[in-house]
Image 1 (cartoon, rainbow, N blue to C red):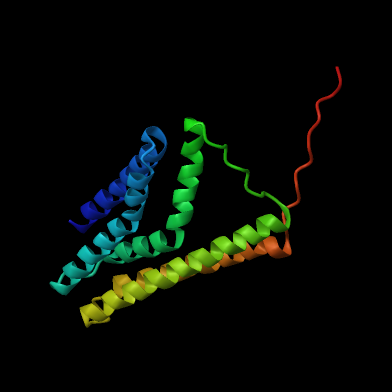
Image 2: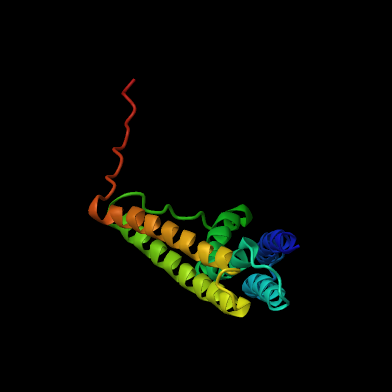
Length: 184
């Protein structure tokens, strides 16, 4: 049942996001758009609350309960960036500016990768704290093993992301040479 709620919340998240941007650009309703965008974290908060209530009622902890905490952590850490990304993709379709290209090489690229990793660390920290809150609610570490395992798996992914992101600091990408067509 919780998996269906996760799918429903994920679909709701994207529907509300697209609706908010269409209200902003298609209809010019900036206040309605802003109100809709402010409800996006509430969708993930609703999912986490439902998950926590399910555990409080004695449900067996599963990865779905942990995933609800992960979604909320990611929504808080990356939500504004995700909205800005979607906004930059929809705005040009309604006469807005085209998005600027992200740096693909050099110091700017390395700095961007480090900032993204710090956001990932924030998401992991929030999600892990929420998972630990759920673990405390279960009152049995053996039963809460799927939740604790999720924190460990995510920590491994975070460490891999650290190595990847910071590798650009020590070994920055070089800009690709500009190809010129031969004279005819």
